[in-house]
Image (cartoon, rainbow, N blue to C red; front, side, top):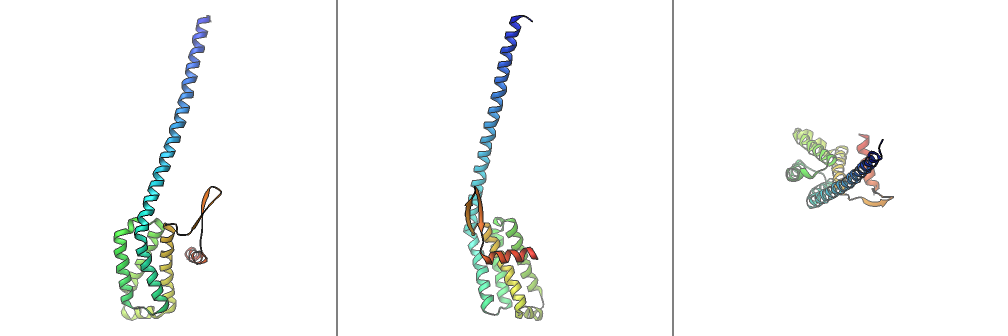
Length: 183
C-alpha cells in the first residue's frame, strides 16, 4: 500500500477514535446531568408533598387522638361515631390526595369500619359499644391510622447511618406494626 494511504488511514482512525471518545464522554456527562435533574425533581416533589402533608395531617391526627382519649376514659355512643366519621369523611374529601398508599388504605378501612358500625341495628350497636374488646379493636384501628400518617410525614426519629437514612420507632409503634403484620 502506498505511504499516502497509510497516512490517510491513520489520520482517519485518529479522528474516528477521537469522535468515539468524545461521544462516550458527552453521553456520560448527559447521563450524569439527567440523574442530577431527576434527583432534584424528586427532592422538590418530596419537599412540597411533605409541606402539604404537614399543613393538613395535624387535623386528622387531632381527630384520631381525641377519639382515642375519649374511648380510653369514657364510654362512647352512636353520636360519637357519627361525629368522628363525618369529620374524617370531610377531611378525607379535602385531603385524601395527599395520603400515601398505606395510609390511604388504612384510612379507607377505618372509615369503612365506622360506616359498617353505624349500619348496625341500634341494639347491636349498643352491644358493640359496651364491649371492651370491641372498643379495643376500634382503638387499634384508629392507632393504625395514626401510625400511618406519622409514617407519611417521617415523625419517627431519623438517623443518617452509613450513607442511608434509617428510622427508629417507639415500642408502641412496633406493637401496632406487629399487630398489622399478624392480621
